[in-house]
Length: 108
Image 1: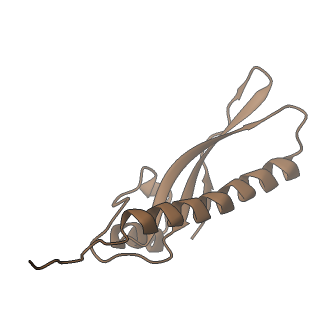
Image 2: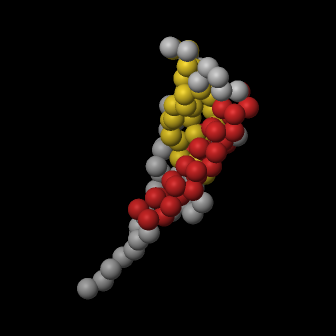
Image 3: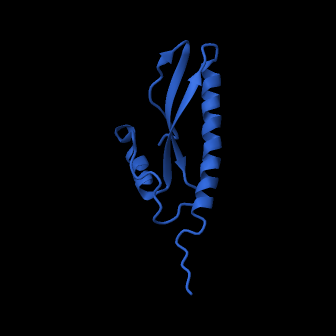
């Protein structure tokens, strides 16, 4: 399973636009919560990724990264990985906050 899928990389005005799909693992999934039930790139995925999306243990998001003409491929790759790592932390924090009380029942 890949964490980052590179889709297309068209070049416009001297810059290369890198279209990506991030697959973010959900650290503490809540039963019954499925943020991304299907994938926009399902034909490119392994069965494990499809299953994880359907089970609610993986979140899919699209991103665009601009690689400038003077930027090395290594630098571009490092920045994409760093951005992915930041989103893993940020999305899990947002998810945990949003579903903090999910499934709680209150009696009066």
